[in-house]
Image (cartoon, rainbow, N blue to C red):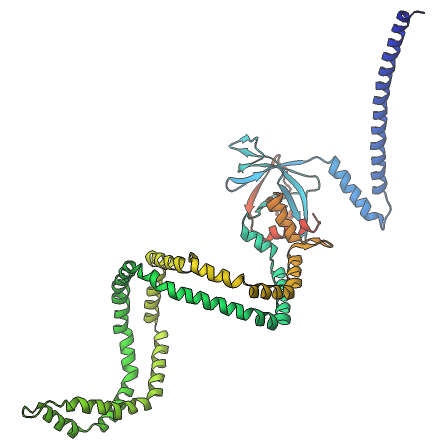
Length: 468
C-alpha cells in the first residue's frame, strides 16, 4: 500500500481517537460530580441521624449547614432616616444573650429615588439587603441599627488605649518609676536644670524687646481695657461692693489704731513748733515737719507693727467675704471672660509667644546644645536602659507579641484603617414575638436607627479574637 493510500486511514483514526477521549472526559466529570454530591449528602444525612452525646453538636452543625444551602433567602428593604453612606456587602448581625454576634445577612443593592444604583458604595435611603436562612424569624416590631466606625485619630487612640489597657500601662509605668525613679532623676536632674536655666535666660533677654516692638498694640489694648473693664466693671464693683465691705470690716481696727496714736500725740510739741516756723522774725526751721517725721518713726510705726497680725486677719476676712459675694464673682467672671475672648489680646499674646519661644533661633540653639551634649547622651542612654523593658512591655500590651499575636484592638485598627473592613454594619433586632404576627410581606421593610460606638468596640473585640 502506498503512502497516499495510508493517509486517510490515519486521519480517521486520529479524529476517532480525539472524539472518543473528549466523550470519555465528559462522562468522567459527570460521574465524579455525582459521586461527590452523593458522598456529601450521605455525610450530612449520617450527621443528622447520629444518635446523641458527642454527636449532638455535629448533628446540629450539619443541620444548620443543610438548611443554609437549601433554604431560600429573604429580601428586605432598609429605611434609613436620611441619605447615609452604605456599601454593597455591609454585613448584618444578630446578638445573642451573651453579646456574641452572628452574621445573618448583607446589603445587596443600593437605591436612590426609586432606581437602582450601579455604584457599590453611595449615599442611600432605601438599600436592599438579603437575610440568610439562619436569620431569626422577624416580628412586626423588628428593626435594624446602623453602626459606623469613626474615621478619626481619636477613635484609633481610644481603641488602642481602652480603659483596661490604660490601667495596665499605668501599672507598668508605676512599677518602673518606683524601681528606677531615684536613679533616673539623679541622672537627668542636672541636664533639666541646665536646660531650664538657659531657656529662661534667653526668654528674659528677648521678651522685653518683643513687647517693646509691639508697644502700639499694647497701649491700644490698655486704653481699651481701661474703658471696658476698669471703668465699666471694676470701679463700680469697688465702689458698690468692695469698699462697703472693707469699711465695715476695717472700721473697728482703724478706730483702735487711731486712738492709740492720738494718745501718743503731743499737742504742745506740734503747737510751739508750728508757731516757731510761722514767725517772720526767725529763720525757717521746718520744725513741724521734723516733729511729724519723728512721730511717725518713734510712735506711729511701732503701733502699726503691733497690729500687723490684726491687719493680716482683716485682709483674709475681706478676701474671704468678697470671694463669696455673688456680685463680685460675677464681675470678675465677666472681666476674665472679656479678656479671654478678646481676639486682639489673643493675637498679641500669640505673636509674643511665637517670637520669644516657638520661632526663636536662640532658644532652639540653647535646647539643642543641652540635649545633644555628651552628658545628655549618657543620661538618656542610662534612662533608656532602665526603662527599655517597660517600654517593650507597653508596646506588647498595645500591639501584641510574636508568640500570642496582635491584640484585638490593634487588629480592629488594622481592619478599619488599612483593610477598610468593619466600616459599617447593621445589628438586627428581630422584635418580640408577642408584639404581633411574623412579617409575611415581600419585600420586608425594616426601619433603621443610627447607633453609637459601644457596639463598634464590641464588634472589634469579637472580630479580632477570631469569634467572627
